[in-house]
Amino acid sequence: MTCAGGGCRSSVRISGPWSRTRKRSASGNEESWQAIQARAKAEGGEVLFADQVDIRSDQVTGRTWGAKGCTPLVRRTGNRFSVNAMSAISTKGRMHFMVFPETFDADVMCRFLDRIAGHFDRKVHLVVDGHSAHRSRKVRAWLADHPDRIELHLLPSYSPELNPDELVNADLNRSLPMHSRARDQAQLAAETRRFFHRRQRQPHIVRGYFGGSHVRYILEENCD
Image 1 (cartoon, rainbow, N blue to C red):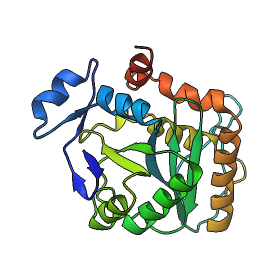
Image 2: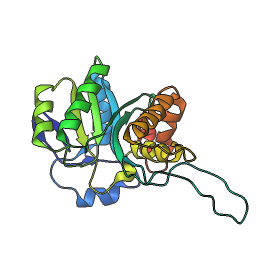
Image 3: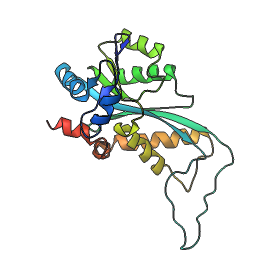
Image 4: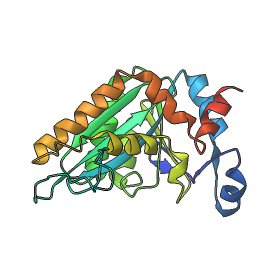
């Protein structure tokens, strides 16, 4: 779906091995990945892929070790808390993020759009999943008020594997410390920000997210 000027069209059409099944289930005016890429290039714009993630204190993260035959034990607080994050990445190795304590909703999405727009002096084509916040009236109104800043494109339904930012989320969960678990929400938020700041200084890793088998279509199209 493309949202610009307050209106929305249906799902982004992805070329490659997955397109045959996606096309049969799609309806309305689809927009191909090639068309989005070509328009961004013609406008001198930037394409970013974004996603949100929930980080909980009780989820299994990181890696550890233990003596052979002995299950390792990790001490942690009995309190349950969480933080959320939104990130966006580009094939150039750029990463932008926002960590927040509240539930992800339209208000948070608009704040993230403000942040992204503030980082660029050109139009951004932002590719996201079909979360209800992305399709909300408030977000559509923001886009209508900023038609030259950001255009939103929604991936086909039930296809998280097509979003390279999902690999950022997996990397985050693997990278959070396991031996010294966060004791409260503030510490968990600080650890999450440290991860994103570290990855911002490692553009080669960010570019590597686009090498996954299900998202390689992005780089393949870039080579045409």
